[in-house]
Length: 234
Image 1: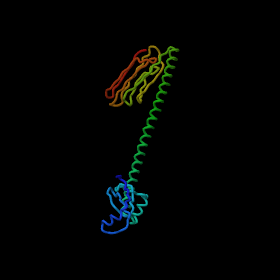
Image 2: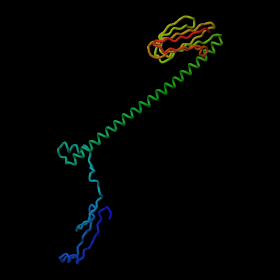
Image 3: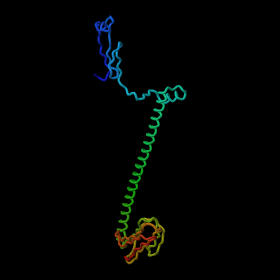
């Protein structure tokens, strides 16, 4: 026996009618499967596919059901459909807002990554240009019998107070942001010197002295308002 309602047409003979105590002519009886049970009836079986009884099917729009609710013309099913479609609409709006927020975050991350890449490229170009300029200065200085002295101040501190000797042997003092560097020509016998004091109680500070591109003196301090100094004679 299948799950579908099927009908079997049976011709009940006159003998059966007589056995029931009535003399009738032959008639048509339909043997039908209704909800899994067999029933005899004198009308044709009607087959319909089984549908979940708990499923609420709403064929109209939310505006349609809402209008019926507001005009007190809604049936219980109309009210259920209005509530169901309103919930679905709110859920769809939340999903769209969530996706929009996620898209904005993805765009922010992409923009941030792009800016970082651009900054890295600019830094690479700046470093390459600085290296090229340093090499050219060293070449020029050697050709004229001079040296190239370069002071470099770096560390985790943000600002420093500097005291250093310049190209003429004089003393200069400046408040600067870190990192910082200064390059100049010097003669043999000159005494380059630099002192850098951390302007705050946090962070470290360090100084380097380069001579013709090679580090010859270095110093570092991690103390509060610490001072790093370096110097020597060429």
